[in-house]
Amino acid sequence: MERKTGTISIGIRCPIIRENDNLSDIVVNSVLDACKSIGFSIEDRDIISVTESVVARAQGNYASVDDIATDIKNKFPQGHIGIVFPILSRNRFAICLKGIAKGAEKITLLLSYPADEVGNQLLSYDQLDEEGINPCSDVLSLKQYRQLFGINPHPFTGVDYVAYYQDIIESVGTQAEIIFANNPLAILNYTRDILVCDIHSRFRTRRLLKENGAETIYGLDDILTVSIKGSGHNSNYGLLGSNKATEDTVKLFPDDCEDLILDIQKRILEKTGKHVEVMVYGDGAFKDPKGKIWELADPVVSPAFTEGLKGSLNEIKLKYLADNDYKNLSGQRLKEAVSQAIREKENSLSAEAASFGTTPRQLTDLIGSLCDLTSGSGDKGTPVVLVKNYFDDYSKQ
Image 1 (cartoon, one colour):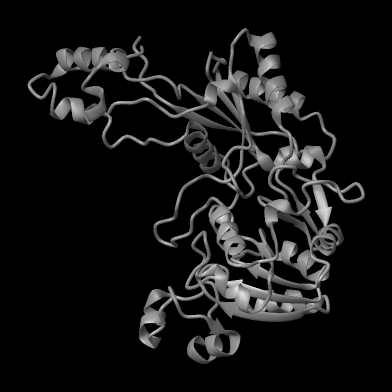
Image 2 (cartoon, rainbow, N blue to C red):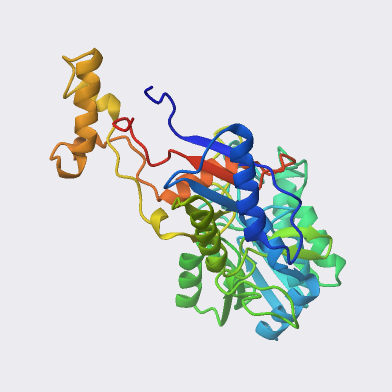
């Protein structure tokens, strides 16, 4: 019988993962047990995806605010630090800020406005327009911000992040100064010792500051790149990708996942004879059209993946073929013509035009987004996702 399904994404329930658990065993056994329970079998090029959260937990990749403070003191001995472009997040940045403040004497906090890098709003553009504020050039003090705009709780969390971040800094005895600007160079009027906290634009921010006289420049990706007295660390991303674990600890982005993904791939091959692809995924790379929030607060969607997940898809758009090349065909003749075009797309001169409107993104970004939506971030209990038929197309039966 002709197969009637395409890509299938299945959330896999697992035991609660603890530090030092054998995650490879848990993932492999959970996937195979789930397939057995629903009558599926593992096939070549199925994809097993594991959320970064349980990888970091199994690794024990945690650090305390005191660990952060120690690294901050080592890197900023002068004591006055300019923090540039942090995101507005209780989960992502608040605990990091507590540790940073604990390692400083004074913090000048530069917040972008009307929103942070990933779309969390302090204000609306309508508010700026009403007050005649130009976000491209105007630098506001905290006093000016309050006089113009008052208190503006986040539309989803209800948190006034300006007051929240000020309270965090001052709670550890550190002096807090808050300014609002979208040009990172504004911080140089307050201090030349800068901690760059944006995520995806961090390289440009650092370059601009360096070119314009900053003296000490580090990024969140430079903090806790090595262990502090046995703490967790991430050699590539430091504090980027970290999440709140407790009131005084963060769970870092998982470090060095290559052995894990290769071991899962090897064990599945041994148990099933099938060659699967494996990846670790974090935030998906998508944006909420209503709240305007970009989901990707991690530095990358996938910190580790097997060889077969490198690159991007090579697809052609079926509706383009149906509306153009084969507009006079229908039924079985149309199906056969489209299937043949797909099989020949590597050598087809028309494939370039037929690919218009497809999604030219990295495989790991697309698959990671699918898995993030499947597993969710709440209480589903499915930190592993099995994706089947992702590499199939209309021509395959």
